[in-house]
Length: 107
Image 1 (cartoon, helix red, strand yellow):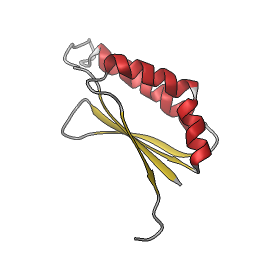
Image 2 (tube, rainbow, N blue to C red):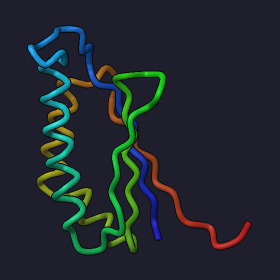
Image 3 (cartoon, rainbow, N blue to C red):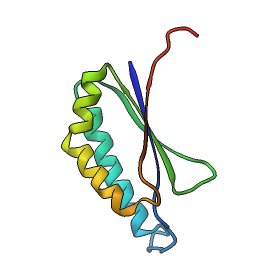
């Protein structure tokens, strides 16, 4: 099993909408949910989850689990991921930080 962790900070979300959230936040939410649903449907995906940091309102972490290297390579070339990466280059405060880890059976 391979774990891939992606961390991102969305741009300033201080411009309020009627719902009290910024348009930037709502747009990010829509894009990331599209990515997650498409990724969860991929062959070889075990799980794909989004987490929001408690203390930093615009900081998110995605944790992905894949059944092997081939599955994660296919995912990293998928259109939904490449489109999301292109989107993040426009809106993130810092580049998307991606780390790949391998499961350790015993330590």
